[in-house]
Image (cartoon, rainbow, N blue to C red; front, side, top):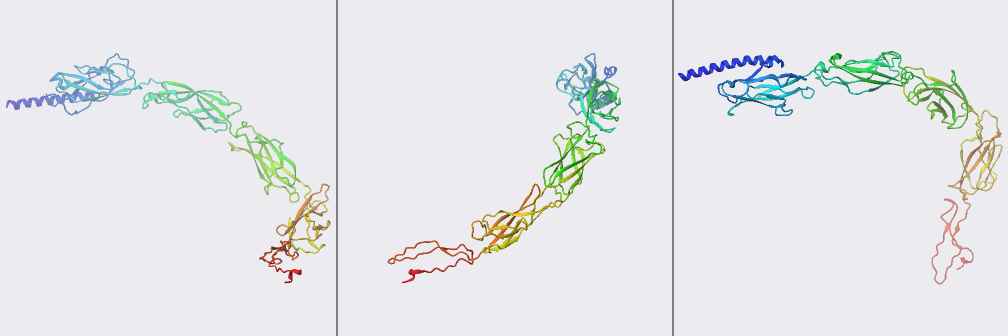
Length: 543
């Protein structure tokens, strides 16, 4: 009966202790920060299910402790009091381990061994470390029993102690001179090492000055959130104002806090906003003369001017013939100085076919225009100069077939040439140019070719049974021109060569006679040569 009574008393005491701990825990959980007045009385207890100190599973944890960075103390500064409920039953000592205790940075946090008061010993810097994790320990003095460790998390609360710093100084950017209003061409950035989740690192950008201020004091604007810079006014002029310097700021607290300054240097780059222009008068007409038949002849050189930046793609000219070049007789290329178009002939011109060409040439640049521009054109009239063209044989090589024994004086062919100079009245005469064997003659007035001397198919001047001679046709221009034609005569074979025995002398012994083979040849072709018949003649026929 006495034992049962003691057990009831013990259970009632434990219940009261649990209720008391619950009230104290509730008060701690509502604690939001290290208020100096509250810190002196704040406490966290290790609850106990019985009057005996034993290891057991934790039933709750201490809420995080918040400490403002850069707090100047005085130090050590009290944060919280750790209290074990077993301290009423046995003497307990307290200790802490973890970051800032027995681990680097060592000694930042300390605890009083006897009463569990937790202190911070010096100023904290959130940018160096923003959180510390500690373990609180409660151990009986005799060392036989101990609490399970209790986790304590200390957060370092940010304050606005860092000024935004631009990531470059100066920022270098460029914008084409023909850029439209609103064109975004560069971005500036600044870094703030304060807590990025607070206004302390919420940066806003602004432009506070522009140099030069012409032609508009606000030529550029900046996006306050992104730092992107864009064109705000018309009038960019590379020749007058080639560079702008902007003084820029980056302020945290959405622009109302700490402010850092920097510079943005903007170079105005050339855009193709000027079309190249042909130099020659407003009419821009050229009239030139070119001899016919010449290939690669320079027809004309067309100089141009351009107000864009010299040697840039917006300044370099290129040319096109846009009409009048039917047949592709002409080409236009850019000269070495990049400001001149050179027209040349790529096919021989023929005065008799076309005595005049009218070419329309347009000039552009290597890169497209930055805005719609009127292109410059030039008209080139090419007059083809007539030159004395040589008479032309048709065909250039005439092939005929004749027997090799055709009689001397026989007519072979009328081989004539025509004069392409239709605008001129000229007389054409003929003569033999090349006649290796001297077999031919030609009538100078008519071009009639006749046999001059006997022809021989077996002559060394005949190749592959063809004899070739050159016939000349000459006009009577003051500077005469001569055309040539080739007359190829295929000589038909006749039996005009006797067989020949190669062995001129044969010795035969009547006592020891032997077979003798004779070698017989004939210069004539098939049908007039082998097979041969050989017989003995003269006294050798008698037995």
